[in-house]
Image 1: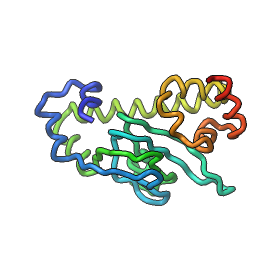
Image 2: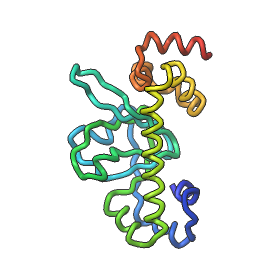
Image 3: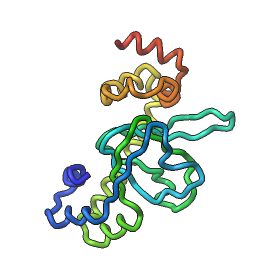
Image 4: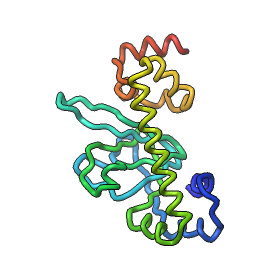
Length: 186
């Protein structure tokens, strides 16, 4: 986590060492839920190892995957974390997953400690917004095959670990269509 923060902002060793007393650790088993719909998200997690997926259940009862997060990435129900309202999604481990966790109180303590932490929070929030925007635009501009190709290029080592129905849901295509796309790419 420290390396990621250092890549966003130039921290002193003293500033980074503030994390030592604020980070907690957790391991999730494959299939275990980190957050369930209607809970308030009070923590942001950093994935040391593993894969998380965010999903919701639509009006038909189908699980719709809206996000994956991989090693060295952050994950939370950001809307719930920011508003302190109930989450609309679930977050689940797709593999055994090792997490570093900053809860709300720890993050507030970091923000109060100085400008660099406030600036880092702003930059990471902006990056999250940009990623959300890119995902939205990809559904309007790209085909399912192009979305798969982009995901494959950026996260090739993880693709085979994600069950096909979750991957198809994330891409907005059927598992059958995904199977055809995979055959064409491989």
